[in-house]
Image 1 (cartoon, rainbow, N blue to C red):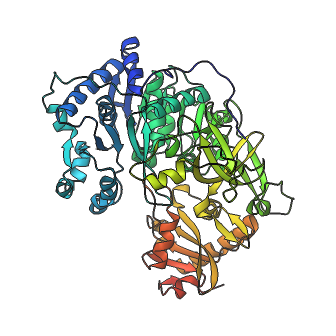
Image 2 (image 1 turned 120 degrees about the vertical axis):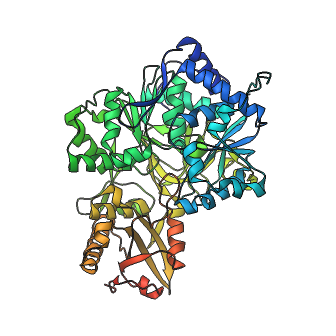
Image 3 (image 1 turned 180 degrees about the vertical axis):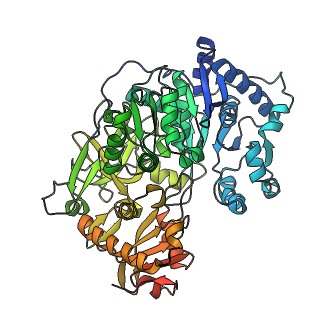
Length: 603
């Protein structure tokens, strides 16, 4: 079944060969318009008009070309700020392939974490800003054997530019970006995004979100994540609007900053993953609702992780008093392989919530619940964007599923990437799928969901499914139980998975506790109480027996660069005895030979 957004006016820049042409046009038409503002909450720390942005990009591009980086992959290792944006566009303008790199992990682990991606993309050089140069002070030595140069942004801007360097005109099918996947279920892979892919998805976003040159953005998502790059940065610059950025760390420290910036710059569009809305609600509960006016906020997009009905409703209720309209909520679904987004909306309508029977959901069908049966509220992610195609497919028979039947989500359209960098087998399997009747090619997302009249619903990941008595459970639904028990989204990280041990199936929930709870005098009793609540809620809500609860310290659950839980990695670490368990309930810890001071016996 193919669903598209309703027809809308023509899309800005859709005939451009690249985002560079769009920026050049803005520099001519609106040279004094603010393009980029970086604000840490105390006011603008950097401000660039479209004319200034154009001049700075040209200067950096000339220096990159003089250094021999044209038509080469170039790694970009930057902290939050405008320097990344300038260097990113400078790379594109000389035909280089920009590779945003994620600075993750503790300082002593960062180079080790970075090397697998660097070795995979084999850049001609890695460019760093001053902060990253300090944090990665041993990177130059690590890259020397690979023949990869390290250049700081400051050194680059001081290099003489070769004014005689010829211009580079990119073609639509030229490779623009290697966007590495989050690696939540497998090793990160570089998705090849062309200039045409970028333009196509930007045009789709403009149409679906109802944007124009007055649609200012506020964003805090990391620039190395597809939502941060293609959503928060490229979309407002594509429009000729203003892109207001702050750092992810500033948002996490003080979630109300996000709302203050929306008010300060009268943002039309802003958003983030579901946890951002939870954090804002929790911060307001502790510190009070900030004195802001959110009536300007017309598109509050929510994507990149499972969207929770509870989060949507709590946010709308909490911030209605300061002008937030629940019709602004804008659920989205996408992934790096489709540039950024492919299903969303529709605009100006309240979110659509569908109550479904848990048992039928686990058996691959969608049915309304009886009053006494366990049920879940699923959030509709909306119809497909104009120009994209979406199918729900039986992953065993490769036939199209009927409405209300659960299957794998397959996508097609001009925004679908070219494949995985230097991985032809994985590219063939994922990007060139065909239905049993030969139709294709399609992108296999690995996500499962279903379609109803109002649009598409996303249930989870195929590789992560917990299967008990022939019924499927999304691990995110199991992990939500821990958040409900703890009551704090920012301190409720958990990983749910299934494993067999000694011939017995175990449904395991590995859960982090906060530092205060960890050092409580009555920790064993606290864990026993947690386990009882988890067990009760699992049966009540999901009709599922969660057999083992493993408590770990804050930060112990492995995550991707974008913060997604790596469930397969958590499972492997538990089996290898590498997960630092503080305590638990069930028989698994003892059977695996893991000892803690607070392990409760089987119940």
